[in-house]
Image (cartoon, rainbow, N blue to C red):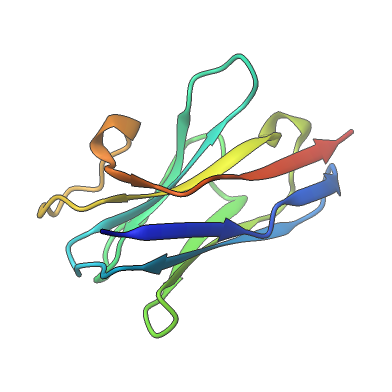
Length: 126
């Protein structure tokens, strides 16, 4: 059973930066995909970025390419999302998730992910 705990959210002005962290426990296989999703009020949960725990990927949503960077530290069992040049449209609850399927594919549908963190709020003011 994988457990995920996000941290690092907060309030930031447009143009600013934040780094989100996701600490994983319970064992993460090298073929697992680690993903970040977000959900704004009244909107569906959407893919942000993902990579393979054992290396490979990453993949980004078009809306964050060039601004966000996903990375991992296997020694710390932690995945990061560095968010730069933040915009008010980036305001959402951000979730870390794991797709434990043994596949080389990096999937972007939230339905492919079977473990989720509790989420962390990111608010970008204009």
